[in-house]
Amino acid sequence: MLKISGLNSFYGRAHILFDLALEANKGEVVVLLGRNGAGKSTTMKSIIGLVQPSAGSIEFEGRSIERQSPYRIARAGLGYVPEERRIFTDLTVMENLEVGRQPSRDGAPTWTPERLFDLFPNLGRMKDRPGGRMSGGEQQMLTIARTLMGNPRLILLDEPSEGLAPVIVEQMANTIRELKREGLAVLLSEQNLHFSEMVADRAYIVEKGRIRYSGSMADLMRDTEVRAAFLQV
Image 1: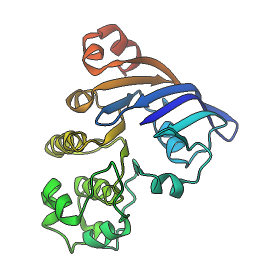
Image 2 (image 1 turned 90 degrees about the horizontal axis):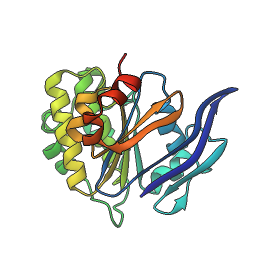
Image 3 (image 1 turned 30 degrees about the vertical axis):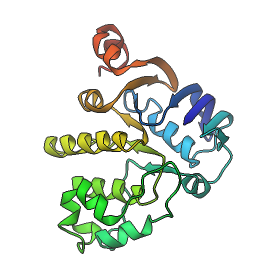
Image 4 (image 1 turned 90 degrees about the vertical axis):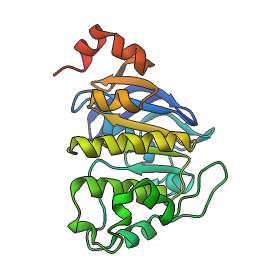
């Protein structure tokens, strides 16, 4: 569903990503692991079009998207949940969801507020609450729910467990597993290895903008040398 090869991205003159390659398939959860500043968020922003790659290809369902605007990529069925959440704090939960609404699309589950409240019961109990009066975990749930209102086939989650209480992290893991059961492809960036082990089928490790490991999550958890070299602080 998503195939990236030879990806190079810059911030100004700073070269951030070097010939990066990865892929994600339908119904699969893939995690991009790495220390802070490794290039994970830049990878996400390059996929969704917020950073324009200088070289390489990004294919979504067989179509090249690396030169398209973010809104066109979103309309094609690729959802993005940024690390900063970026909910509309003055709008209610229901109003935030309406902002993300797109028509249903072939090959993707169709999400309604009612279905999302089944997935996120906390949101269902605060439909009329402004986003600015919600906890960090509730805001993270709302951001994911708003993105799902676009009925994506693939969703990018940038650091979804960061700053969340352990009980909310567990709920987030359950949500990602449910998205997988719905047939979505999920690509997430993470520093939380335990959370990644709970949800991911495959893993890539990125260090200084280069892929250093590619394999199953189970194999990574058995490889103490790789984890020590690239993930321990």
